[in-house]
Structure formats: C-alpha cells, structure tokens
Image: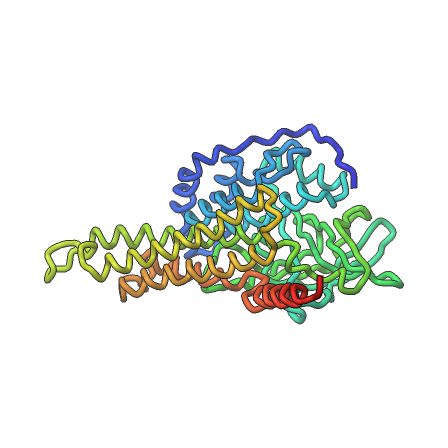
Amino acid sequence: MTTTPVAVKFPVPDLRRLPEVTSQLAATAETYDRTAAFPAAGIQAAYDAGLLTATVGSQYGGPGLGISDTARIFAALGEGDPSTALIVAMTLNVHNMQGRRPHWPDRLYSEVLARSAVGPALLNHARVEPDLGSPARGGLPATTARRTADGWAISGAKRFVTGSEGLAWYLVWATTDEPEPRVGTFAVPGDAPGIEITRRWDHLGLRASGSHDIAFHDVEIPADSIINVAAQGPAAEQDNRAGALLHLPLAALYLGVARAAQQYFHRFAHERVPANLGHPVARTERFRQAAGEIQLLLDSADQLIHGGAQRADLGDPTYAPEQALAAKILATRHATAAVQTALRLLGNPGLTRDNPLERHFRDIQCAPVHAPQEDTALLVIGTSALRAWAQAQEPA
C-alpha cells in the first residue's frame, strides 16, 4: 500500500486545554444521557479542539499522536461524557491503525481526510452480529459482500455499532460471494441507500453512544472500497493480541468516568453536613478511609494505563501485548471498584437519578464488556505464560 500525499494539514491539539473540553462535555452529558440523543455538541467540541483528527498519521498531514497522548485524550473525554468519548475513540482508533500500518485504498482514505478537514467525519467498525456475537471469540461473518458490475453490494445485520447515527463511514466486516470466499472490511458511506438503523439501543450506561443495530440491504459501494481482505481461515479471524495496545486508551476512557465520580464524592463529602454531626462528613474517619481507598484504586489504574502507554510509545521491546491486556483488565477492575466504593458511602442519595454519581455508576458498568472481554484476555495471557514456561524448560 502506497502513501499518497494529501493537501490537508490538521492542527496539533493543545492537550493542556483538555480540562476545558472535559467541562464542555460535562455540561451536556446529563441531558444526552436522559434523552439518549446523538451527542452532536460533544462531538463538535472534540472536533473544534483538534481531538477528532489527533491520531491522523504525520504522513497524511496529521499530528500522529501516540498511545500515551491518545490515552490522555480518552481520559479527559471520558470524564466529561463517556458516550461522546466512545464515539470519538472509535474514529481515533481507525486513524491510529492507518497511521501505523497503511492499509486503506489511497482514494478512499484521501476522501476521509478531505471530509475530516471541514467537519467531523466519524468512522467505526461494524463487526458484531446477532448470531455470531463478538468476533473476539472467533468465527466469521454472515454479512455478505456480493459482486456487482460496479463494485459490491453489502447485506447483513450488525449489532452495537457505536455512533451509528452520525457515522460518515461504516467499516463492515463481511464475507464475499466469490467462488473461493474471502473475508474483509468494506467501507460503506453513512448516507448510502439501503442502510437501516433499528434504534434498539436502550442501555443501562453510555445511553447517548447511539450503539444501535444496523441492517444493510444490498447497499452498493465502489469496487475499491475494500480496506482489507483475507482468505477464509485463521488469518481472517480477529487477532486479540494485535490490537492490544489500543485497549490502553479505551481503559483510560473509563478511568475518566471514575475520576468524575471521585470528584463528585469529594464535593459531597465536603458539602454534606448532617444535623447530628455538625460538620462535613469529610472529617469522619469512614469517609477519609473511603477516599483513600478510591485514590489508591485510581492511582494504580493510572499507572497501569499511562505507564504502559508510555512504554508502548517508546517501543519498549519488553512490553508485550499480554501486558497491555493485563493492564486493561486490572485498570477496569480498579475503576469499577472505585465508583462502587463512592456509591456505597453515599447510600440512597447516590442512586437518585438527579445525582451525577448514579450516571457514573451506570456508565462504568460498560467498561468490562468491551472486546476482548476479561475471560478472552485472560486466555491469551495464560496461554502465553504457560508457553513461556515450557520453552524455558527446553535444553539450551
């Protein structure tokens, strides 16, 4: 795949201003959570701050930010509004992968960049299917790409397509109808005829992420809309090790949710003055001890995510994909436990719909469900550990 120069220059985002973006997203997060509407204001705020193109590769005129800076962005957006953050994350991950290993057709990626220069151009993969479930557990898609005179026609059903209502392109995982079928990713324009958004997303958390089910009814696309393709077999299935580093920023997104919960917990502790106590609960041993537990959990999660991201950016050969997967697991556990600890201290007030902590608690429940889920990641980690031990026993 060659890299064709493009006449686009994207701004380098000033990450010192991330707290401003966090505040912008936080101002509308409750409204979007209640209405489950597409978070257009948050997406625009991220775009205006240069965050939506932050991982466009330098060879394409972009900032080419690495894993560490991407994790900082995801954490800031997640603290403000995780629904917006997840939609942005999907787009940034696509640009990140293209910058690291160009694999898009030049004409198609140039079109993506041109649209990104004038406004938000959201991208996301459509991989999960009703019958197959997550491809992280193996298997091949039932969605088909049928040859036509001018290109391909895509038909099939996908689930949990985050940002579906605002995507410029769906990156659809499908099987070709060729005599020897192949499996690949096909770029489908978001406004193409034949796309049906079923709007079934009615979730506990991340309600504004628009992760609806999508049906493709003979959606026609040009012949050069294949992003990658492989013969059926193990090579066509999802490699959970290959994309392990990108799970660090995704874990940072939920660390942002937990930090937002921590901020509310601190405010509550200082403002709550029970009549029988006569001073803020922040002075009590119970709240101070809980605050220490929350700080411990989140600081350790921070080290796992951002420390690992820095090692990845430096090209540390000792930082293996299994370590990134392990960091994701532990950081997610810690972030979830921190929010639960805060909720337990507040009691009934923390479960009230007008309390921000109730929303943070719901949103953090989505952290463990991202593929590869914990059992799949542990299988990769354990298999590697057992293999390494066996190899170490072999005679030199």
